[in-house]
Length: 72
Image 1 (cartoon, rainbow, N blue to C red):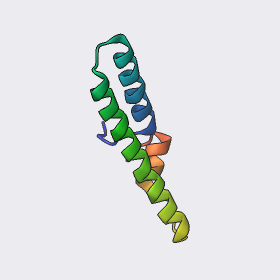
Image 2: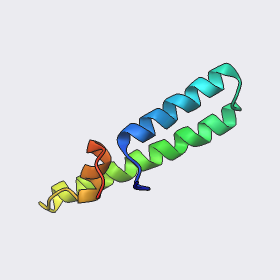
Image 3: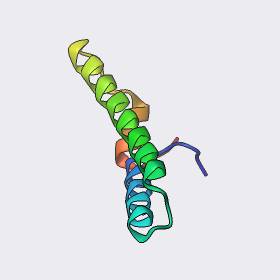
């Protein structure tokens, strides 16, 4: 079992948060915080991809693992 976050887990967490806010089980401010964390994670991945592309380096393995739901 890996502690690494995957894109699928992130998507599920965001969806669960949205559902919880809609049903009243989660406060909107908490849902907004969860969404903000999701945005920051995706921004970080985007920056990693941009740096890899601009420096003509291969995509980091942790980014591939995140996207493909694989772990080491």
